[in-house]
Length: 233
Image 1: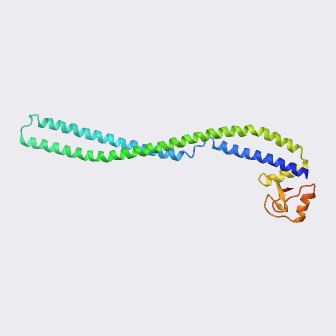
Image 2: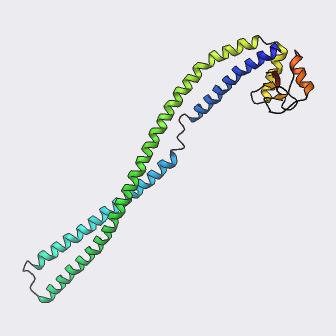
Image 3: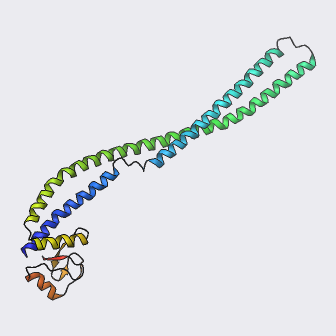
């Protein structure tokens, strides 16, 4: 019975080691992993492209309108310069000015629509960039926290391992070998408490005779349901 208690205590240390090894593997895999940020970065990049395109459209329209302004100014200067005296030529010049102003007006209407698109696209990009910045800041904080956690876990391992090795040395070899075998086949657990005739490992009852053996035998007795080594509570 004393050996089973030793195994139970050894299991407590082994489970602590397991928890730390699992968490170290998790933090190691998570460090540097920014995959969760990639969709957000992609969306912000897309919005930036849209904003740049609409700004480019505005610049092009400004240039086109500026070209019409220059042509209108040139035509009006000629119209009022007094150098054009023939009525037909004056009429043609006035018609050209009217056409240029009409075309300028069409471009100005387009510009108004584009300006609205520019505002919307710029706001969408700005909002997305703020969200990305917030998430990147949180990600960096998580990375720092995981780095610190990993360092703490690493520092705890030597002491736990030394405790584990010392406890294992005190267990008779046959019981220790059985413990290692059961633990390997039961996800790290090998010993379960027996409450009355109920195994704490599987929460199921065992035959009274087997329960009595667990109370009196010096050799390990295993649960007939889950196979764990039983320690009478």
